[in-house]
Image (cartoon, one colour):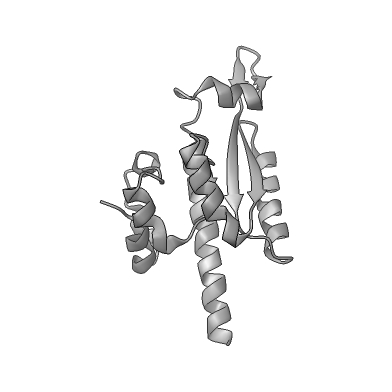
Amino acid sequence: MRERRTTTWSRMGVLLVAASLVLSACGGRFGEGSDSSSTAEAGTRPNTAGSEAVEKVELDFWTFWGSETLRPIIEKIIEDFNQSQDRIVVKHTYLPWGDILTKNLAAIAAGNPPDVIVNDIATVAQRAENKQAADLSSYIEQEPVEDRFFPELWRAVVHE
């Protein structure tokens, strides 16, 4: 039983790291060619230098982490991230495990998918093959990031 709990927490830790990497990777690139609907929704704020307005980017982040233990942790991580800078606002949407996949497919079909979604790692290749996942390779620095992950987890999220 203890081994299973450790494995579950290890997996959860990897997912949190992955989500953090995605959010961190997005930080330096948003605003370059971004669509005006997302920036209009999030608004603008004056630059601290006063020379020009900085567009705020709103990221829609979906998770299925709704337990009494995990949800407050996720909300705190998001709150800390949002307060740590003024450029990106993460909006968290909790959806139960049984609903998140269905709603994601519906959102993709409608052309309005979430920006970041915590999903089942075992289906990454299938989702990529069906054009339901974004290629993030352009957001990854040139240094080999795969060394930061367990080999099994890295292989599970790489498609072609």
